[in-house]
Length: 157
Image (cartoon, rainbow, N blue to C red; front, side, top):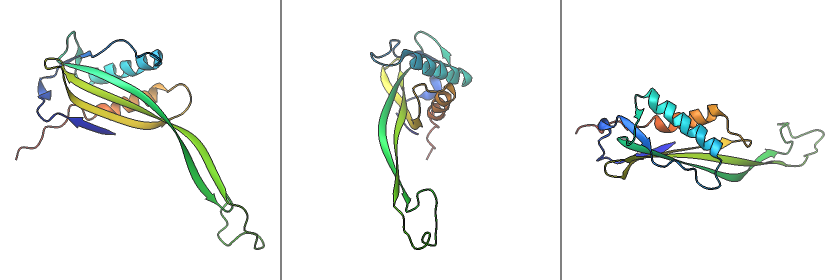
């Protein structure tokens, strides 16, 4: 999880929000986008923000996925560890576990509607499995990102 914020932005004046765009990008899963958007709506409502047209800030999000391969050396006996060197001096063969993993990412951007400038950016990446991402995972990702919005005010020096 990471985030960045414009240090000049006055987050204390934000009370209402709108969506930066309504249409799903071509080729994306519109049902997944609906679930993510509903999760963001619920989270912002729980923090006291209300939806308006136009709002004080606009919300946009991007979903991504990247496949990667992980290799795990399991040692001479694979998952069966024999610390004293094996049976009768036989060393066995080394084993490697190969897995294909998909990392899903959620990026949420906040724009000031008056200036039309970005004021906040947050993202998280987590391992996802299967074709359908469960709502609990979506809610956890949204909560993880938006837990840092609005950012804490900078300490006075």
